[in-house]
Amino acid sequence: MRELKEKLEEVSGLHKVDIIFLESVDKEFENIILRRGKILYERCT
View 1: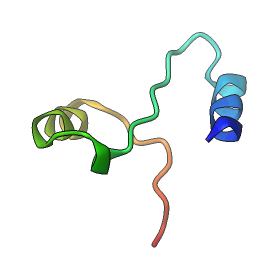
View 2: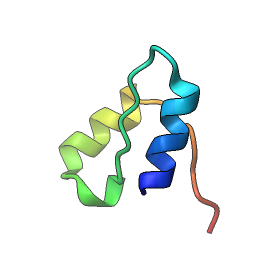
View 3: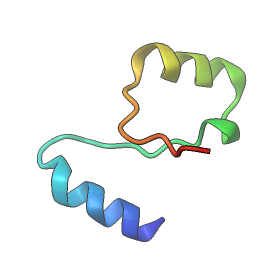
């Protein structure tokens, strides 16, 4: 996780980036994220 945060800081520049694990938030907040957020990386399963 720390390595991922460091890489994001390198490339994000002046933009703020939040790392969210959707399975760890309540359903209402998940829906807000899915409507308004931008997925930068999605692990393939």
